[in-house]
Image 1 (cartoon, rainbow, N blue to C red):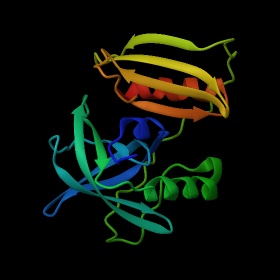
Image 2 (image 1 turned 30 degrees about the vertical axis):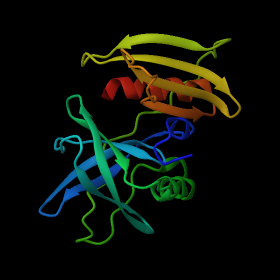
Image 3 (image 1 turned 180 degrees about the vertical axis):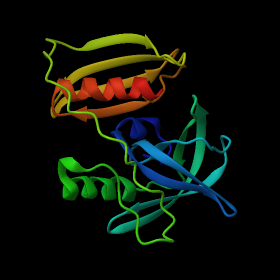
Length: 205
């Protein structure tokens, strides 16, 4: 399939995350938080943003690895703004580095620690983490809803069982045609985790 084939993009899974990032152009670098990512794109929440269509550099600092990616701004939405950026070329390095960091750090993971002063990475988010959600009763079948957030954004969502547990799909509403890619396409080990990820997404959008 070609790089831009919609069917190929639909196969990519997205991960809801939260860790610091620097992005921008020479002469203007900004701090933000990556809130979800895939092999083809990522979303950044920040008080600063660039217009759709612009090419920017993205810098992410992990304990053992620093990444630099080139990406194009696809859209900017919400308040505070959230930017979706698509990589110029297919690149799994960010997803792979993130997965390795989570695996090594374990459940206590909160954010990548920057290198020594001058590395240019923003400080980790020191805000306390909420306690894990108490298990809730799993539904007997898929859950489908249409919701509107406190910021006036509307979404169609679906939580369904898949081979690895429960899959969360979130689409912007109303949908355009042909059917667009989901805002979120992620799998979780149980329904409680999928429901918690959904609530966090709606809270921040």
